[in-house]
Length: 455
Image (cartoon, rainbow, N blue to C red):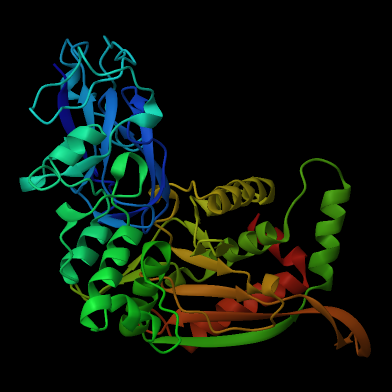
């Protein structure tokens, strides 16, 4: 006889306490193998696929796409058949691909994709009488009393248990809508697959009920509400909001800026790329300038420990860089950037940028930065006063590089000009240090040969 096992949202590490369901990878009735990814979730750090440690038939999913679940909340239930022997019913122990998962058992048997017959009204499995069903026609699954997952039978059985059996509802949003508006779900016939009760069914029942009473329902009140769009602050957007708010609240920041003639830097890059070999990006050259500047002004590569009332100066540069994606702003981190050359930095920037756009950055690639480089010039703007990426102490901003009139060697000329800005934590240094750092960066931009002293 099949055993129904519940798989809960695992601890995703990095102190994360919740995740949003982005995309289900399986449906009710699908046969899954041990450690097969079953759902894609978005945390405050990244998008990850969550594997199920059980093999069997999916009998229930908890939460629609877009639902936010806390760690430990039920994700799905799996019916594990008699073939689950040798301890396989206990699961593999794996909880997340690529994040601290244990090795799967050496001996593993796949659950045969034999459809499991859902229970009938009298509690039997109906294995001898139920016709064979494919994965698409599995009965809907509901949460019964006490939170237990129960498979709802075929149409006759469902009609027989309409008043005292389990209610075929998966979505917690539908349950809440019914509860808040006094709709008895046991009296509804769902319009979804296998009688699944949908939001439209609840709203329809509300309209029928109010047609005779004349009272206004929550649905009609919502429709008549003033125009306006509310966007939940969750996932990456919520994490960014929390971090920026904390930075503004805790860090007494200040900003200084300077215009620099980037003509020679652009020429140097063109010459490097014309010499053959891997191409070097402008961002990589700016990153190399930053690491050289931090070696001269290490106060800006630090963090503040307020509990100990100490400034902690760091001996390595993990360089973060701002990357705009469809899901919002993320800051991937290049580890040990101070130990890499222009070609290595170019390759790492390209890899992390691609992963950011694909939503596959790991939590480790999004944390641990010590200094951030923000190239907001890609948005076509000249200047900005960026907010420091807490708990770092400084951020260098780079505007667009555009032709402007400039006095060069005593004469007016058209040069490639860029505005550089440095936002810094005034607790770690004063304006003299910040100005010295920024002036050194500007000198390297105007005369790349200055960098040769540090290579």
